[in-house]
Structure formats: structure tokens, C-alpha cells
Amino acid sequence: MDAHEPLMTSSMFLEGYCEVSLTLDSTGLSWAPVVSHVKKLETCYGIKSSSKSESRIGFSDVYAVECVDRGSFHVLIRKIGAPRPCCMTEMHRFVVHGFERSRTCRCTWVLSSYTFGNKDPQACRTWIEEINSRISIEMSRPKNLWVFVHPSSGRGNGWRTWQTVEPVFSRAKVKTKVTVTERAGHAFDLIVSVADEELSAFDGVVAVGGDGFFNEILNGLLFSRHKAPSPPVPVEFANYFGNDGEVERFRLNNDSKTRAYASDFNASVSQPEASFTNEDDPLLSTSESSGQAFSDFSTHQAILILGYGCSTYGRLSVKRQDLSSFFPNEWFRLGIIPSGSTDAIVVSTTGSRDPITSALHIVLGKRVRLDIAQVVRQDAGSSSFTRYAASFAGYGFYGDVMKESEKYRWMGPKRYDYAGTRVFLKHRSYDAAIAFLEDETLNSAAGTGFRNRGSQDTRISSEKTPRSKCCVDCAVCRESTRPATALVNGDSALRWSRSEGRYLSVGAAVISCRNGRAPDGLVADAHLADGFLHLILIKDCPRPRYLWHLTRLARKGADPLGFEFVEHHKTRAFTFTSSGEESVWNLDGELFPARRLSAQVFRGLVSLFAAGPE
Image (cartoon, rainbow, N blue to C red; front, side):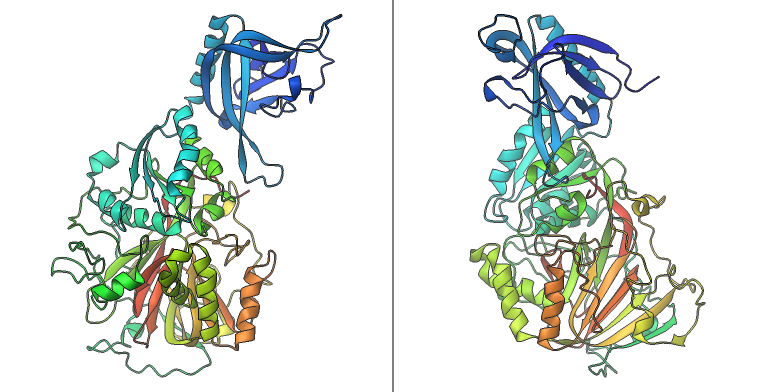
């Protein structure tokens, strides 16, 4: 059967246009003027309720159809002797709600509506029922969502942003439980403590805010529901630590050194738990039955450094809930309505920073898998503490900018530019050592065992590896048949490499991290669900050279990684050790104090209401 074979046809009037022959087939609606000589772009009284040049809309692009009361209807009437072509008449009406792609940016979706009228009310009801039956077949569309609104996100526009998109959800008949957060960690507390049976009643959770707010919700979901071992740590790397927590045998020079050694793991780190009990201190030491929550920070320091939307979350005593295999999950998805300062996750997954576009991705039930990085603080002398990141983990310049910006929250999003300038002028570098798993696809013929080599051997070259950007229906991201596979401890087939030296920054990109300041992102060819982190090591270099690197990030089509002081490694796991007393990481815009940590990526661990950038 032809997909466009007519199943239903009627004569209808299209608001602001003319009488049309409306046809329904298995994939959508189409219409054509009954009077053939009516121009497609001709409108009544200049009314432009939608683009009249469009003559078809697919059911996959229709998010709602609704009946409206009988009322005035503007139509074009072409009759011989008629004094004017436009007239107003009373009709029964129904509206088909959909979207069109913006002419300036195809990734931005613009709301559109088509109002059809008929003298017969039953004819309108029949069409409404038939269209509803077609769009209800699409089982991927959500019916019930838990929406968290960050009222202070961006410039305090969180609630206004939700009010802008709420009509889209109500028209689509999506039930929403709306929670406006009142403090840092509020969303985390609610999600981590809700019973799994209650959470399962929702088709997903939506964050109205920025990347940091989404990170809070993500950690609330995964904290007790993701059952996986901590990232692997090579034994030789673990020997850098003594009993007092200070770095031993940590002699570094300004030139980075890289070497490879056989895989060996420290399996002694257990999956941590956390306790959030004190209302005044988001960074607390923990009891014997729970994990460490940054006890090396005082309450006063935590309050100074961590503002709203930047905390370790929660003030609630939490017990683990048992729900095996909740993640990865095929039906439960996360959504983001952008209202933050950069919104890198939204831009990387939809291609647009537009709230309406994101709302349409959600109500239409779009789905894309997303890699998630598990980051475990493993400072000697304290219990491990686990956090998750969906976009980026950065140390050095990235962490310093985030820490500095917390002093100027009153400036709004401009604080990042101001803080970035201050940190850049300080030009601080840090002694560090990083061990990372080699990409076995790049080293399949290298064999296993110990071997020495230079850093050039492990750096990914754009000349050797073709760059394929992630996009809608990405072939690379579709290859994962068993997402979120954990690394196996003691697997001798895996190989580790190590880099050590002085670094201006250390970054691990989960996705491309596209945003307004970096149109191609930190790593242009990073994928949403390929199961890899992109480790970016910026070695100590003169300030003008580092500025050149940063300016390339801001230019579309430039290569910010093509410098001799930049190492780029594609890896599934890495371990980081710093010799400094102060060490702050930036995880999706959230501060994470750690002098030693390990991280691994889980392929496609969560699903997002998005389709990928076009």
C-alpha cells in the first residue's frame, strides 16, 4: 500500500487562505486549493496564521489537534462579480498544531498551526478523532512528566521560560508535575528519595535550567539506581600515593612524558554512598556507612565557593533503593528546556538553544542515547565519592574559572567572561599525572605488555583520523547494541598510557560541548553515544600561545587541538593525580574538589528527549 494513498478526503476551508481539499493518508495531512488558480502565497487581509506555501504536514510533526469554538473565519472566495476576494464567515473550526524548521537555522523549530473550518460540526469532529488516533499510535510520545524549574537560572528567567513552553505541553495533553526548586540540591533530594514505583509512573524528568541544574537531576537519578563498579585504576598509578595522602615519587618537569604499560586494576574501590544531613553545609564528612562528601572543605569555604546550582547536592539522609537495571532504560528519558548560561548539552543534542525547539523534541517523543561519565574522587585517606557528568569534566583553567565565577554570581552570565579573563591573566599551571586507557581500535595491532613511546604516538591527528560530526540518526551512535558496558577489572588485553607534566588545563569531553562561545564545541567530532571520552591535555605554554588556542575554540571550522602543546586522547577511562594542595574540577558546571580521581564512560547510559543536531 502506498504511504500517500488517500484514506480520507473532505472539502475544508483553511483559515486565511481558501477552500481546500483536505486529504489524510497513513503518514500525514495534505491539502490543495479547490480553485486551481488561487496563488499559494495569496492570503486573506494579509493574515498569516501559518506559511500557506506549505501544503503537507506529517503526523510525526503534529504534536496536537484541538477543537475550537464556532467563530469568525477569514477565507478567499473567487466568484465572478464578487466585490472583493476576502470575506468573513462563521464556521466550526479545528486547529492542527505542528512545527516548521526555521529558514535561518534548520535546527530551530518554529511553531505552526493550521486552522480548518466547515459548516458541519460533525465533519470537524471526525477529522479531530482521526488525526488523534494517528498521532496516538506513536508510543514514544510521553504522557506524564516530572518537570523541575530552576527559578534563578540564567538571568532569573527559569519560571518565565517554563511559562513560554507550558502551552506546548498542555496542547499535546502531556501531564506535568511541576516542581519549582527552592534551594541548591532541592531537585537532587526529591529525586534520590522518591520511591522507584512512583518514579516509574513518569515517562521522564525534565529540567528547566542550565547544564548544572541538569547535572543535579542526573546525579539524583543515578546515585542509587546505577549499579556499576568504580572506574579501574592501574596499580602502578596507585603507588603514587602514600598513607598520608601526599604524592610520592612525583617528580615532574615542564615537558610532558607519556609511556604505556600493561593493564592492571585496583579493584578495592567500592561503589560509594553519600549522606546529606546538615541543612547549612552542602559539603559534609560522612559516617562509616556512607561515602565521603568533601570533608576537606569547611562550611564557610563551601558557602563561599558553592552558590545556588553549584553544590554536592542535598541535605537529606538517603538510603539506597533497589531497582535493578533501571539504567540504561529504554522508555525513561531526560529532557532539558534551556534556561542557563551556556546550555552546551542542549546545543549538542538538538543543535539549537531555543526553549520551544526543546519542548517540541520532548512532546514529540524524540529519543537519543547519551554517554555518561562516572567520576570518582579517590583522595587518599578518605572514602571515595561518586558523581556523574553528561558533557564535560575539566581541571585547571576550567575549574578555576568556575570557582572564580562563584564570587560574582550577581553579574549573571557575564560573570563567566569576567572570571575567565581574570584566570587567564593569572596563567596558572599545575603538576599532574594522567593515566588513560588506549583506544583499542587505534592500537589493535600493537599487542599488549609494557612498551615505551612518545606522546606523539597517542595524540589523535585529524590528518590520520577522518572527522565525522554527530548528527541526526548518527551511524556511529547507532552501533551500540549493548550500551553502558562496564570495563572488566583485570582484563590484560587493555593497555594504559600515562602523561605527566605541568598543565594549564585537563579536560574530558563526553560530547562535543557546542555552545555560543564555541560553535563547534571543544571536540567537534565527539559523538553523543560512542562510548568514548575525549581527553584534552593543555601543557604549560606561553600565554599568547594559549590565547591562540582559546580563540580557535571561538571560531567555527577552526582546529583548537592542532598545537604542539595540546594532547588529544580518545579513551574509555582515565585516572588523574595532582600534587597540589588545591584541586577543583568542573563537572557540567558544578564544582568537584579532588586531588585524585578516576573516570570511565558508560555508553548510552541514559536516553534524552532529543534527535541530535542537524
